[in-house]
Length: 190
Image (cartoon, rainbow, N blue to C red; front, side, top):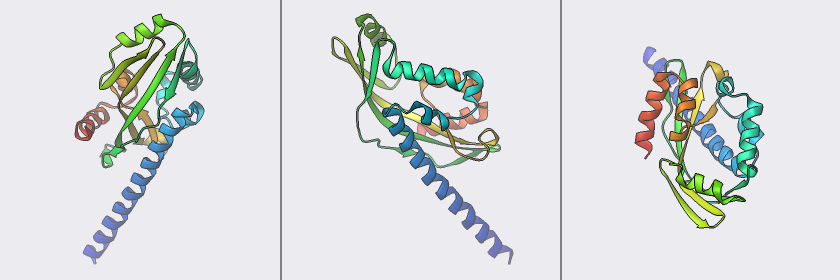
């Protein structure tokens, strides 16, 4: 009888993880699509809530909107195959995490050449940055999203960028254990 209950429990757990993997995959695709469509408010609704302790949601939305089409530049996401690769869901303390890696390609058009020069000189780990013409650069590379389910998300999956550029911010909202596990997952996704 105990063996039967154990098998039933194992099957139920496996089924829940498979359902979560499907949810995360759909959410990853949705976030990438909504970002490319400049639906920043909808992306922020899917964002890990602890991030808003560091920067209020309204401020993040204003900053993201400015980056997408203000401050003398316009971001244009180019349709490319996502080549989404996901880790398995890992338990870290009371939290669960899953890391996804996907391909991203965008162009940034500048109204001021000085801004373009600054962007060309800014190091972007894992990205290929190239000058297209006098007013446009292209950025191509692999991006990462971390899915998190914990007490802060009230048992739902929420998401956080997990690239080198987000490292300082992530260290303020994620535990050292989650960062260590996510870093390990990132190595395996390359």
